[in-house]
Length: 63
Image (cartoon, rainbow, N blue to C red; front, side, top):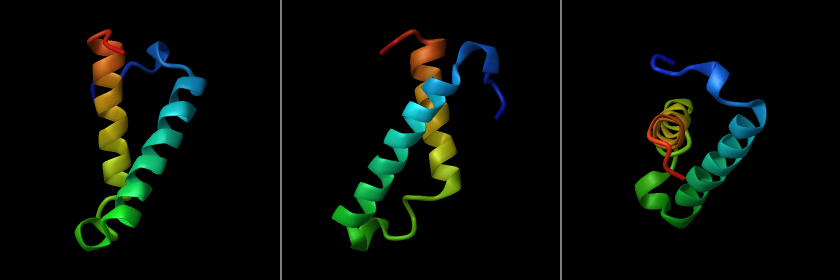
């Protein structure tokens, strides 16, 4: 994805955030099926969430 420097993140960072993003998006679909079913847990949304977390934690140094 554009704007990401892979040398700044570790495999552990990626695994951890990926796990929690999948959990969060799946929980949305279970908790709110009429609003999120088959629309929340998509590859595009996962990538957008990873990019958001990268921008917030790595670029802005906010945890």
